[in-house]
Image (tube, rainbow, N blue to C red; front, top):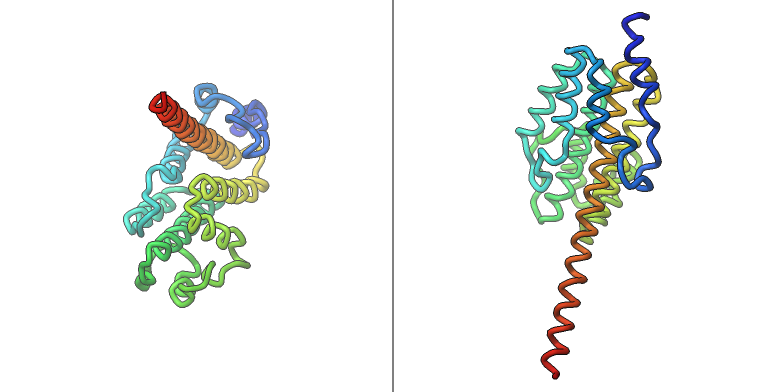
Length: 227
């Protein structure tokens, strides 16, 4: 139990997060979070680094099938000793495969070749390529909506859907962990989701502001031309 004491203290010190999409920012700054993570063992700190790196959506181009990304995630899973954290990576990789399939179909591409991606249902995706959610609505209730948002080119809506589903996956896995390293790792990964959404929201707000400013300038120019 003595070895667990620092992790019990760490988890107890972490503020609970507000509901995703309600909070405007993560519950504490990354600087303060990193300061608390210094109690991690060297081995655990390395696992957390691997997890954060491989699960960062910004490191991947989701518009195309990327076998290198699949191999990279598989390689990382082999270096993670905790089964629940390996499951977390596997679920993210499966989600990435499904989103990549939607994007390929949206671009008018033919079904991918045999063995493509990382998913329990790759053969069904190929066989039912023309169906809205590849016939996988019961397994992935979010998939049909993701396809609709993609068709509408609603990037922010799709981002919200994907982050929300990722958040639920992590919460499900985290429910079995309380004061161990897995609990710490999942807390940090959820922190990253809050941070990602805050940035996505800020970028969308900036785009809206720029459009409004451009419209105002055009309106002013039109009025001046009438003088």
